[in-house]
Length: 338
Image 1 (cartoon, rainbow, N blue to C red):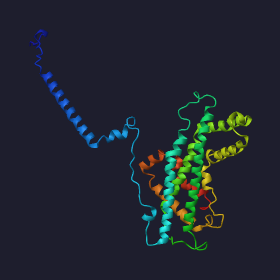
Image 2 (tube, rainbow, N blue to C red):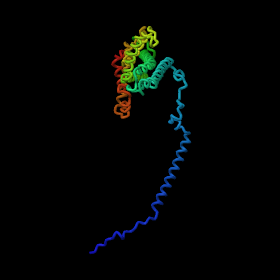
Image 3 (cartoon, rainbow, N blue to C red):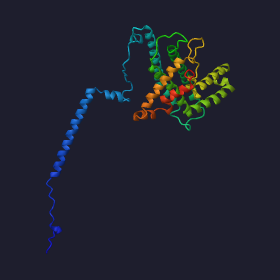
Image 4 (spheres, helix red, strand yellow):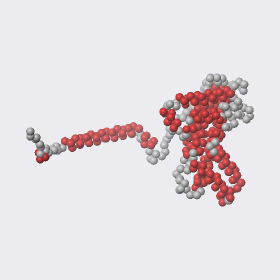
């Protein structure tokens, strides 16, 4: 049986009739038309938004921006109006303290956290010449003084919160009750109290983990002050002013740099020295405080299996910032709970 084979000479030549080129040109025209329509659509959206996107994000072209936030124009006295005048006073005091704590927290987050975290940034140890770190710390002392005043204010607000709660939750044996509080729990007050304690604990954690700040402080206090002591006239400082300045530095170091901001707060003297409000011997307030801690524990435990809550804890500055730890430490240390 013969097998028919085609010789290479008999292969058919490919006929280029231009169909592929025509098809490619048609697709290219369609793609160009799509781009034109999409560009015009984006331009219409931009015109509708009146270039607001550019105003917000283009910092180089628009360094000054207008921040519009709604503010409550009514005062607390106008918002808090019930038929019970005593309750009005109690709610007003508690609301004012909550607002004060919110302001302190905002000030810490926008001013003091960043000021401490970014200290020493932009310059390495190899690029700094002798004396630069002392000069940098000398300029930073005024910031530490403001931070000291801020921490002192936090202490005062916390004592005021405790006194206000202790005055409300009081047994009949100690004194007359302001209002009947059986079954009434001001959970919001304890939540704000936790926020204030979180601020103090965060400051402790920032300072404790800031090696550059501690090193510069040590060099400033030891080397620079010793040089000034040996020759005060060279630095244009009167010798009688050195002692108060050294005491001031020791106060800043003990209050801010020794990791005692949070502990010093909860170890304050909460009982009034003039025989006013008794905190440590107020069993009714201790029970109410313990009840609030248990409620916070229950809220946290209910979220332990939540993935979002786990990410929230991991994204925090430190694990010690968790509310569970805060209230546990508070329960262990504070004398008015034990």
